[in-house]
Image 1 (cartoon, rainbow over the protein chains, first blue to last red):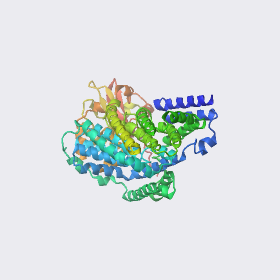
Image 2: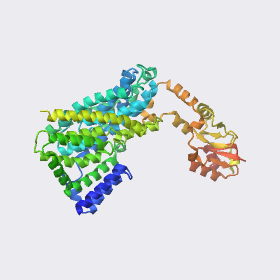
Image 3: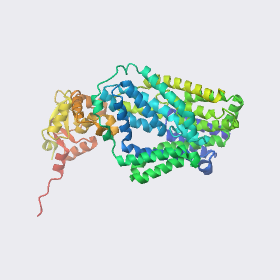
Image 4: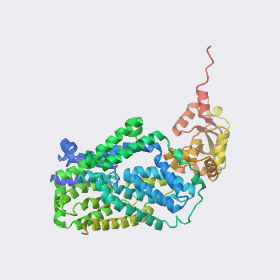
Length: 429
Length: 154
């Protein structure tokens, strides 16, 4: 009976999150409250259980990275890089688009996707105004590049952070398994954008005088803070790469990096904490309590058993189902609650494999499907929604269907290529 | 004191006036805004200078003020071109958003004028007599009337 009530409460909260009938934070907290009222969750289960409680590694990794980004964006380095990238392209529309996509993808691999597009989109509008190009294709391409680039690392996209924490996979595991295919997918997406936006990218060279007149050095507001921030960022990345050797969790690395940056930047708390997305962190906490209740009542274990019985040792089939289903669902619903729900299920599946070759591929399939599926529709990923909002505020309306008709092409092609990659890399032998 | 006594002659522009002309009118006379009138002389609304500035500066620069630093001097010429291509009508909100106008009758009291300014967040209020604009009360004129300079006690 309790199990049925927990599933009903979870489903109700999930529908509210997906449909955005109420704010997603309110929906997640209501779902968590329902679990407490049903007697499934108590303080120990919610706050101190590694299996069923709030995943503090995820919360503090996000918090640390948000503080680091909050300081870094004050330096103007992103604006500098975007302008110099466009100037190097010397007014060639496709080269500008491709360069900005690469810049966005690389930045998204290191930072979160939404921050990246928030920083790159205004500069893109500036560049497009200077060269007299319609900005919509560039903005759509950048949102897609952000979602693809974020797939490459453990810290690039929130679903990856959840997967990293649940699976115990390291930063290097993510880079070694996902970064190679992300490079290929980015190249393919650039090619697809060349084709999809061919009418907007016609012509070889625009009037570049206005573009070349922009002074990118003026974008750097505080060179000393920039130098300090870059040193800390490089140190944080080095620590991420070696965290398994150092035996320090990525969350600790991010918090230490944030602390160091706060200490040496001498900024006021309101300045570096102003960029922290507290609603997102609270949303995650509510979500973890909701999913923890499913684990606590054995719902996840039952589903995992059904899946394991159905799939047996056919891990390629399991990975195929996960990557396709994740891709399809992530285009419709927020991939964060989806991955938060799926992670314990995949964890049980992988454990049931007892280290069998190919079992671990389920994690990579989940990451690839959930991250790349976000490109499918205008609401599939937060970065898409943010880009559409920025475009609308600047009188460049991009409709849901305009984005989606391009997004579906990119999502379908990239997920198909990613599926082939999973098959060839983990199951071809 | 009534609005009619407080009102000062004030420039008006039409809905078809280009934004550059409206901006120059404000600039030349150091005004916080201008009155926008219909063709028959009835007040349509107030165009505050801040609205012109918001139109002038692209939203992406308002989102990321760092970008304002990277423009060179020729950017002001582009802004002029941008303003000259658009009319005052283009800058005004849709009719349903401006049902109430920052307008008072000439016999309104000084506190009525202040109340309209506060409610409408307008730096000036048009004063009408028989539906026609006879002038306007600016916020500085309002303060001057409300808080006159005290003669030096010494």
